[in-house]
Structures are given as structure tokens and as C-alpha cells.
Amino acid sequence: MKKICALIAAATMFSFAACEVPEDEPGTAADRADTKDAAKEKTKTKDASTEKKKKAKPDAPKESASEANARESAAQYLDLTAYSRSGLIDQLKYEGFSVKDATYGVDAQHANWNDQAALSAAQYLDMTSYSRSGLIDQLKYEGYTQAQAEFGVNKVGL
Image 1 (tube, rainbow, N blue to C red):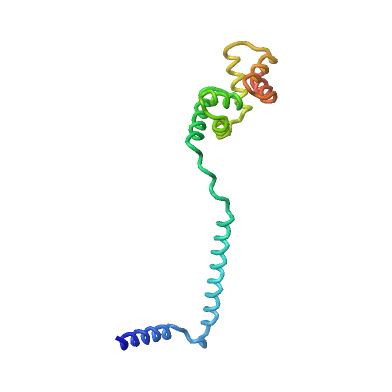
Image 2 (cartoon, rainbow, N blue to C red):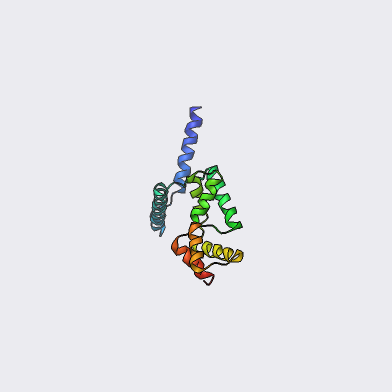
């Protein structure tokens, strides 16, 4: 058994020695240096990549089921009609969502509240006549800011 182990060890050493390139062959020392430099560069790149991953922010927490439901409900309401931000939050609260979930659901829509005010103004004018100031007051009552209400009224031509 000892002879077999010694033979295997000798054969392994011989095979490694046979693979080595003599240093006096032209170009081989430079090739080995280039290979070492490439290996060092690869290691540096890998280390930098690992460091970036460590410094990167962890994934944002996933939304809860109630947040997802509030987001979906807010999207459905905006598909039906125009809402102000505060009006839509109030609607979701009326539906039973917490203030936190309702606010999350509404903000997740990334709605343009000026455009919503313009849609509301047009919807009101489709139902009845308004003066400029009366329509601005109605939009403010619905939860639009003064600037949003004025934008909406301007957009419909009053």
C-alpha cells in the first residue's frame, strides 16, 4: 500500500513538473506575468463588486396585504372618476382602510393632481353650470388645493 501511495505521489509530481515551462523560453515569463496581472485584476474587480453589494441598500420592504389592497382600491377609484389626493384618502378611510394604508395606496398611484382637478372641473360642468369662483370653491371643497382648483378651472376655460 505504501508503494502505491509513493508511486502516485511521484507520478503527480512528475506530471506537474512536466507542465512547467522553462523560464528561458522566449515570451513565457511575460506571458506568466500577464496571467498573474489578469488574475490580480479579476480579484480586485470581484472584491469591488462584493464591496458594492455590501454597501447597497437592502431591498425595500414588500408591501403588506392591506397596503396592496389600498393601492388597488385607489387605482380603481381613479379609473372611475377624478379625485383629489385628500378626497381619495378620505374615500379609502371610509372603506375601512387605516390612514397609513389609505395614504400609501393613494401615493402609490403617482397621480397628477392638477390633471385630476381638471377632470373634476369638467365633470362638474357636465352636470350643471358654475361660475369661475363657484367651481373653484367646489373643487376646494372636494379637497383640491387652491392652486390645483385654479389649474382645473383654467383648463376647462373658465
